[in-house]
Length: 212
Image (cartoon, rainbow, N blue to C red; front, side, top):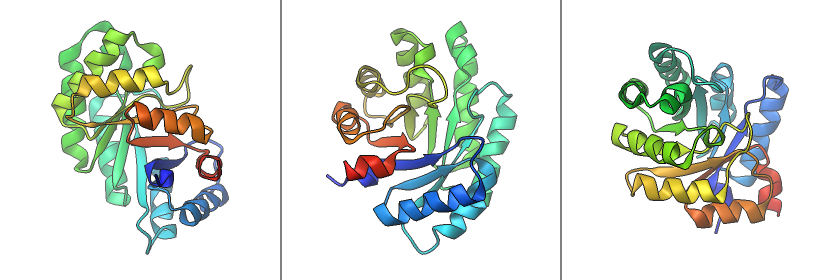
């Protein structure tokens, strides 16, 4: 298994400088990761640094809270794509999901799917949810046409778990894929998540995982 091709090599910390982004892209080119995932303000830079390779440029919208209005997150996703993003990860409106406003959540996710026009990964932030809410969020996202449901931003509480990946894999019932993210720092855990059903991993520790 070429585990590098499962990895979105991620650098989303607020202190990341252009130099940090350049080093991250060098690492991606060295190991052949699936993509490099950055905040929207660095999409153009990453696109240029990865030029000539098959490594994709990925960005985020509504990150890390997911609580801005739908139109704002949709425009952010759309703009990231115009700058060169080939996939977008967006945070679901967690408060609406928790409160049971499922119609709102569906309209929100569907609007962003339609706006960005590239594969959309929707982050549920599973550490804030019950299993029932995780399942419902996955079902809504799958019906809205997302490419992936994703466990976590990695910014809050517990990140990816084998339990949540298994739960999400079952809930989407083959309609979309599952991305695990948050706290993935070594090969063994990465392999456990893949075996549980994840087809993509979001991590800033891609080098360590591949070397492990």
